Length: 623
Image (cartoon, rainbow, N blue to C red):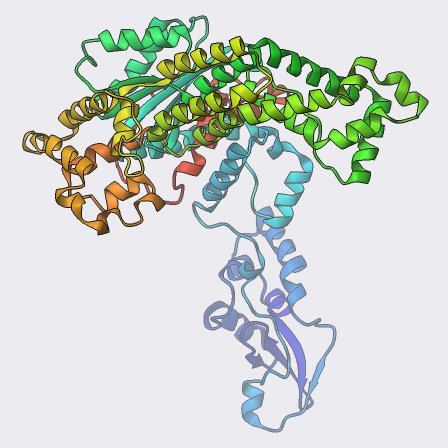
């Protein structure tokens, strides 16, 4: 560039004590008009000239690119300095202030880079990872990165950042996040002392067969989501899938396989028990206690007297909610009475929801009766006569209240046992409590004597369906129960199972002491003779008690392992709820492969630490 052009672009004309001077816009040094000296200053002396501007101004290349760069410089950088059209008057007789003008003139000599949004190496990759993780864990459609309003938001928030394309999100970033999550999950499972496997089948939005496998440590981790394709959920197919997971994770660490009570699942148990690979291992094959209690609720609902009450209750609710006039008036009366509970119909296959139906009617009893005695001709015409008669019947409401009292313990325990917290030791206590409750309340319930007798037999059948020696063993080592309420002989079955587990988890000399410690634990002798050991034992989790107070005993290894197993396979049911939230009607085009990866990421997000570095250098590839 010509020296005159440099003078024009890099210096500001000022007047100091009546003399024209040219001040450098970057270091404030001033000169008389001498373009050669001024050019040499910019070229060699001034240390404040930004590198990008120095190259732009002093490059001998007169290419088209250089002119464009200069135009950009003219439009952006010169806006930061005073207008050269105005001469600034300075009166100062001090010679030093002439050579080095004081900041009476304000110049903006910062680097242009401070005013430009730039990204350092790897920063975009990190932002892409965070954005994609937010998309994957919130079931957000991939199309969000194509939405113009979202793009405008990102551009306003961070002008330099360009979100990844939809294809990149659904392929590269999804695969990367899936592999990262998979390695975290695999790492957590391998660190666990023991684990259990649970699985169940389901149909997605396209009516395609899906099977989810959960591994509990005791934290539940989605381990596999299998697109079964044309494969039937046969016992052979199910046992093969369980076998592959157990062998992959270490068969010596597997203590339980939990499923529902379906015949194909129970047949799969038998196939695994007969398999030479697992025959000698103490793997407990038992059913989900929540599913068993749900079946017990079905037994209650099927009883004729209860069935009639259910039908009447459903008829009342359907008549109200399916008619606009009745629904509007019902809502108006509710608001006047400040009642906020809606009427609820029972859910198919969730027979415990029957109590929610009855309770919603009880809470709205006054509203329904107010509606039934209304003189409004529209209400009278729409309200079914049989429904009106039942609403005003004291006997009906009496029956509803007694049925709620009868079945409440079943529903309460279903809710408690569906938790992810392992409560294996509670199962024998729950089943015994429910039976005693029915023995007490059946005589004062609306049930006929023959119906009551039949229900008690059903409870015994469900008990035998749900119970396994592992439940007795867990109850035996739980400091809150210690096997005191077990039936005759059940404690012996529990001790035998304890020995099987100890044989796998303990070494030879440690295994020899296990029976001694079991006897001392039950008799409160030896280590357990001290009162301090039992202090606050009822206020803490049984596993915490064994791992914290009794950690030096050999029995603690076996007890904490058994107590870490879940009582139900409700985690599998929850995984299907997450799956349906991801693969819904609006995302019907989502492939089963991507849906399973999204499920894996979202369902496991709360059980792994995304911020912690991977401990193992050996990355595991999903099979």
